[in-house]
Image 1: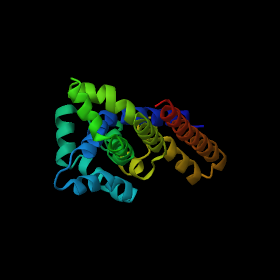
Image 2 (image 1 turned 90 degrees about the vertical axis):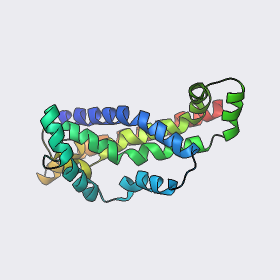
Image 3 (image 1 turned 30 degrees about the vertical axis):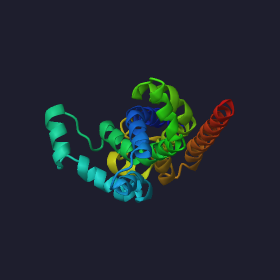
Image 4 (image 1 turned 180 degrees about the horizontal axis):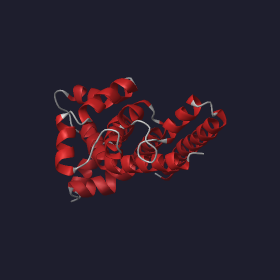
Length: 221
């Protein structure tokens, strides 16, 4: 078992969720509640990482974050951080390729809430923030929970984008998915099987737990 790769994967998944959740909540709710011209294009942009081949997305992220790019050069010059083949760049890539896994379930959850509930809350004297926190978020929480679990589990298993942007640097960018690939390449099938089985069991348990929790919340409502 490559414990270093497993710990790095868990750190990446947790950091991705922490960064993406606030923005994803805002974006999902905004798309659910706000009609505007060109909305379909924004929704298509949100879904794009889901339908693009990982190598294509990884290539453009590598080009955008590399030292020769304006962004990569500016960050390296002013912050002293190299974005390509480094954990910060891996985190940026992880946030981008997980956008549809978090935003879409959140959007659908808020779309399922009747609009007149917000109007009733406003008539009752609740502010927009109080309405969101005390009315909308509790009702949307099963969808938000599912989005969080999907994002976390998907980060653990992502391979193509991670390999393109981060490579396979031990302790820095080698996630458990990359480690499984490396073990297969070196014909260590027993080690690869051990890690793959762990990911399979963990992913199944996490998704099942989120469904169970969502069902319990729905019953309570």
